[in-house]
Image (cartoon, rainbow over the protein chains, first blue to last red):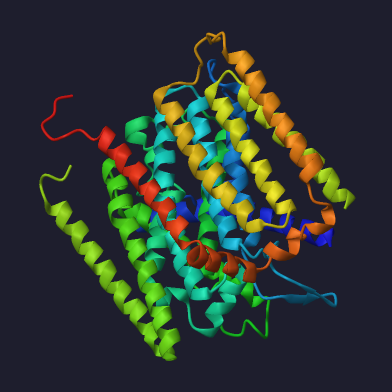
Length: 366
Length: 174
């Protein structure tokens, strides 16, 4: 029993590590494709070994520690950033149970009945690594990056939590396995609650400090933000954590809104589950890269105003709409009444977009 | 049972050590970090008692939200280093007296009033299932609706107060 967990955990960690390597390659090639250039194509066939070359370079770089840094925290914070990004993947189901050597194995490390709360709590402690890195470097710019990241992550966590509530309402459970199975009966939750899925996507971009919300490491303003003083393998750990968070958060989004491992024929061939999962994750990752290639960074006060004045009220409205729709469908006994959820939430999303548009048109917008 | 006991002893050691570290650390950031560790070990206590919901809520709310704000404020004000303390003359005797009262009360409750272990419902079966989660929600929003709403209004008032205190009126000079 304990061996099963150990092997599953090792497989998960190695998949994430290899996934990190190929995600950097994927991102550079996709960016190059969007900007009509070639991207890395020298190391290995089509540049497929590029990430190994990068890793070797980073390992052999000199590690610097600033004289006035708080040494212990400076040393620990890359680790503190890295660990949550792996640990959070433990509750994600990658496929239906499979039979191997006459025994049935579940394709997840753990199925806990408060799975969504687990995701929330790990996501909320992920900020420590970045804040501590900024503080322990004893550098003004690094500190600003750390402060920015903590303010930003706390603000967008609320929207993230409310999108979780939308999913819990629709699935009637906090366990990720049951959420996926609930989508088998109805349909993908992204169809029922499309605005919720988009909100979740935007909030996750802010949570993992991706463009256009990468204020903690805005190069033009604060050098490199929280990892200004880091080099070599310590920097590589930050880099790794960011890309693993991208993969994991795409996996979570797939599970919550896009039917997880469900797909045609997955019941007869359970091994198709991880494949469907991987395809959906790769598509979502492409959206993240696309956003990076298309949009400039948002100014800091606008980022905060967007989080508190647009995302949070809209998320609250979506929770209300979803609850109302489910209650109506339950009391009237007519499941088609659920159709008011997507209609009303699209109207709410449209109103929010109009408001943002109007406030951006005003000249006095600070 | 013995595994639980060993886990409990190690956790208790960590909890006490981090609490002491929080008190004795001269750097406010280290104090805050010790407190985070303390909250985390208490969350593991809840897990050990078979209450995953409270454990996760503990980490999300205390370690994840409140302590991040604490750290944020400490760093923003640059208040990491404590100034050398002046000990007030009456502080120590008062603290010792209060601690003695606390110890006496605890001893009284533990020795004279504590129920035998058999009377206590094993928590693992009562809080662990999802049905229990739903029952928690039902209790919170039916039976305890008024205290719940009053709490949220209190928090709202505190928030409005903070905003009123810090907001600058239009036209007011810095």
